[in-house]
Length: 484
Image 1 (tube, rainbow, N blue to C red):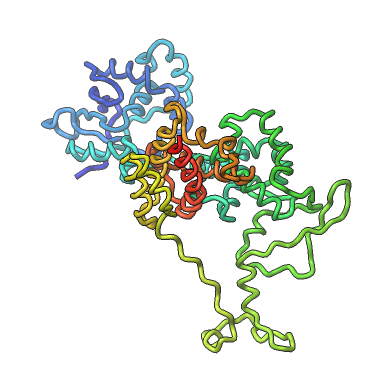
Image 2 (image 1 turned 30 degrees about the vertical axis):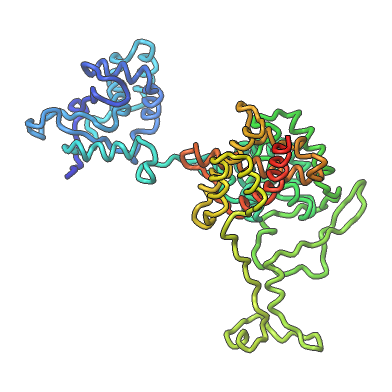
């Protein structure tokens, strides 16, 4: 059983067989190896200013199992960087010459403890088990899981990052993007929202609190722009390192490209107000707007599905008077005085299927593509969305090569918008843009699911919608290829 006890610093020795370096002969060689590669000076400075972390204890075992525990030396199995920092703070002369002056300055701020609270664990298997959980990654949830960018933002509360996170939270709440899709997209949103020209184009404002965004556009216009922002975060058409000029140019084009009005609200609205569930309909009031050079206008109030549901609870008799006071009871519902609530549509069980595409793949004679298409069409979506993302991406990647794509390219380059604006497909520019986005999303989520340790595609309805847009393109391209 592990035992918690205090042991003198002079009786704690570095583990000469530590995974942080190749095996060494003595403690001085271990100190040299740690100082060379493991940022020990930075750790020593932090310890001198803040002390040892109360969240972490050293794990040790007796150097010689036969020694009396009261006066034995103990090898540190977990905590070698911290022990090295403490030993150098106690005696800076043991450090490489380039570090000694800095360690002397750090030592002046800190009283090195004579003894350290440790956990004594003599069983090597037990030590390995806990050390692996500390250093070997998530281990399917058993080990430590590092914060992702979003979680770091919430903790460190940097205003620039908080602004981007607030906009993403709004988009998730409005259903423009799933929470899973926002994984790894914060930095691009922060880059765009941090640009004042882009913020103005979006109609986005922040006052003192970076977690409370406002809009000065009517809700319908703002939501069009918010949807574009989330799509851009997913596919990064502007480039992951888009510079100021690129962002500014796009900002000037957005209003016209998305068909937004030039209406602006004289009094910006808090986005949080647009997310309040089942809020009452605003009757007889509008958002007071200014358009162009101060012309007064009134924007149409948006009614959420929750608003419609609440208002539907009130029945009126022939005289127009309400028969329902808002307090729903079981007898009210059984008597039929309250209309039934709308039912959520049933989700699709399988991916969209085209018999024509199946026949064309058979004619192409590629067994791999036929097998992938069969799997995509028959696997149920409910419990296998990540698998379907990988399968769809694999099919598109292999098919595009079979259709003549260079192996150095990718499916987004093969099915880019200019290639989709084909007279045979009869796509408008807007439709071609949407279909291009469908290919992009399947490429991104399929690739993430296969290669990233935690990120994956989980949005079944988005995958279904994208596949539905893609199937006519596959039908067209296969027919064209087979006619050659």
